[in-house]
Image (tube, rainbow over all chains, first blue to last red; front, side, top):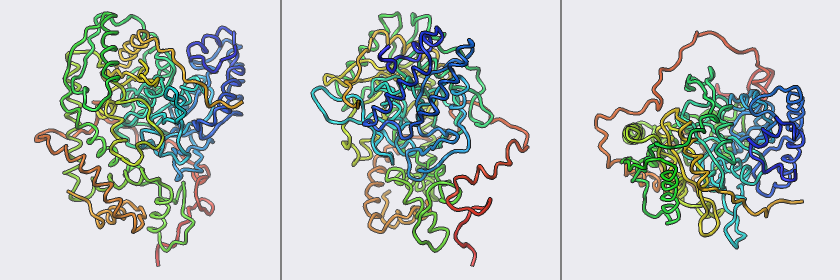
Length: 495
Length: 95
């Protein structure tokens, strides 16, 4: 088997169970793929020794006919998840040397299921970004390039390293986190599958906090089936996260079965926005036609407050971030200034100014402003009311449908450096994904086609709270109809 | 509402971020660009709409107010930039 690294989770799982392959062979191939792909800058920390040790342990369990749902399967972990004894930077200089003395619940669940860790993936600093260009470890390059072009494109963000690693076959699957689109947007522009579960489905314990009422962990995979398999292991109720919800974790893979005959699919008319390229609208229509051909009923729905979602997000998320990031003070952990300082306030101010990058500082300032005396009601309180209206739009829409179909992004991957000077144009990348976080719903991005220029585009399915099963089943229907088998040309691999 | 240089200086102080004098003016410009865009929220009538407190309808869980973990002072000190035994060292704060 020459291309073990391009296997899906399901294929590799079945091959391991059937003893056609060992985890050691598989992991060796992926460790090598990671090493050969350093040009993508997808990983910030590689853990090959740990990977091989975990693979050997998995092989021992598999030999005895034991093993969990992900036994022996090599994964990449976004560097936002605390991993005990392995550096966790959140893409920030302020955590540049941080080695957590504990493990996040999601990653612990994955190890308990037998998964193998290949390393930690690059990301926008504190998950703030849509292009992976705010990382202290430098930008990640998208494995995809436009037809007849050598220009480097961004992989989306903030889970850009994870998306590039899955897309370029550096891992079988990866974890991501999604606060405003950080799983689904990078998945869409790298031709991969990304699932943001319902808020509360996965524990946030041990995930470096950005905006606590919006953050949610989820799988980034090559197929919809793989997303179902991986979510089953990531999800849990957890005493260490009081917002994790005590709802049983179903067998998501089983829920893929049964087809979509009679499924009511809503098309929100407000998602037809100006300035979005024709490819996107065309793909969206095609997606609806695919679902209809498989027996679904298409209904038009209205989400009237859609256009207010992004500005609402850019008040709520920075407000929560400014509060969460107050903990980085240069005292207990993280970067401390080596300048001479005169008092404790100066220690805080200098350590934070040196440790945080430009985008993070900008968001801390926005958040501090909208929470400050005299502005709280005008900004923060108003935004939280808008959030209620956005949630009500979805509740109403779901009275007449089971799942929503929308574009995933307003365009394909863009060039490195193209949008960094204009924050608002960067923020607009999340226009189709951010509503879902504000309402706490599950959203899935599925690769559905290529632009004329040969770059991947995704479609998004949005479901009712805790109805990941329906979202995945509809996603599978899109995946099968789209029959997306394109792979990026292998320009980055070194010998 | 527009943010000026003095406002940036004030919020930077509140946020404990050292923003150099030369950056205050450009930062005010960047923040104004974002706040102007956010202004569109004022179009919406939010009279009588409750503020969102939780997206998922659930009561926060309660547990016994008891110690569940601890005795790991060394682990907690591992990432300290400066320490003495199990104490974090900071500059003198009391004259």
